[in-house]
Image 1 (cartoon, rainbow, N blue to C red):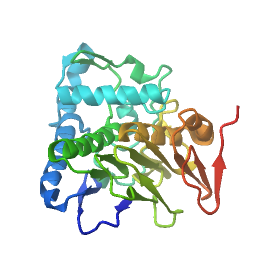
Image 2 (image 1 turned 90 degrees about the horizontal axis):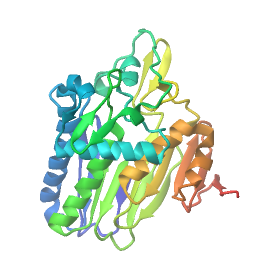
Image 3 (image 1 turned 90 degrees about the vertical axis):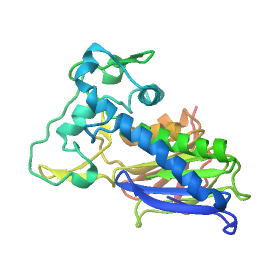
Image 4 (image 1 turned 135 degrees about the vertical axis):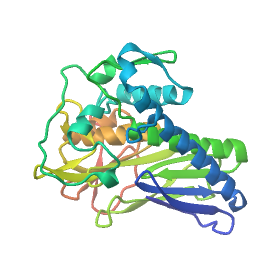
Amino acid sequence: MASRTDHDWEIGTADWSLWSTSAHLVVTDGRLLDRARALVDEQTALVEEASSRFRQDSELMRIGEQLPHGVAVSGTLAALIRAAMMAAQLTDGAVDPSLGRALDALGYDRDIRLVFDDDGPVRAVASERPGWERVTLDGSVLTVPAGLALDLGATAKAVAADRAAQRIHGELGVGALVSLGGDIATAGRAPRDGWQIDVQDLPDDPACRISLGGGTAVATSSTQRRTWRRAGRTMHHIVDPVTGMPAPSLLRSASVAGPSCLVANALSTAAIVWGSSAPRRLAQHRLPARLIAADGSVIVMGGWPSEPGSTQWEVRR
């Protein structure tokens, strides 16, 4: 996803690699671009240092053995835990932050750049009771039962985008768009024609453009990226909490626009898990959404702009 505006003479943009994906920053006053980039770097570093599952020196990994007994955590990690729990509640558990062990068992136990195809066995890690319901945060004391491990990857990235955009606007007084690997947050006044967002997962997928107002967000989740082979099967990183396995790839991608990147990301990720029931489940939230099915067909709903060949899904009472 990329952003464009017709005010190129007054905006500033920056692109760089981050977390095995791409980061994109736009500010409405290019003179403040370097300061804005520094705020994004600061915010993403805080999130990584608190919650990375792939850094042994992150706070989450350092306290792992203590979590069954309860341990006080930093304000940053506590906020990320609360965001992940909110996403679980919003999606009826489809987005579950307690799937760290399931992802490890599938081979996603390191940065995606270092996950190699192999013939190792596939072992599903499922639970009769949703793991997120057994995770507690009492003030700053986090307790995670033995047998569970947290993975905050998706929601933490969305929170980082939200916080970075808000900090740029709050501290520099400019409109800002922050995109972290398909999670896009904005804050402050948008350009005259809105933030122009090109929505397309892979180059061969159907493409469309939407306009976001200031302070809104959009996120895309995909079964086509962050993939690897294990025991002859293609794996992806969106796990169905019920089975402990990658969600069936009934959808190539799901995009949702919302009031925050956290909400948009939670619902776009849940849509992949929900599969064929995603239109009905998403309709309950009445937010703009776009689903690309495995056969390339497009479903738009909730006010998402129609496009050639798309089907408008309506709520049926």
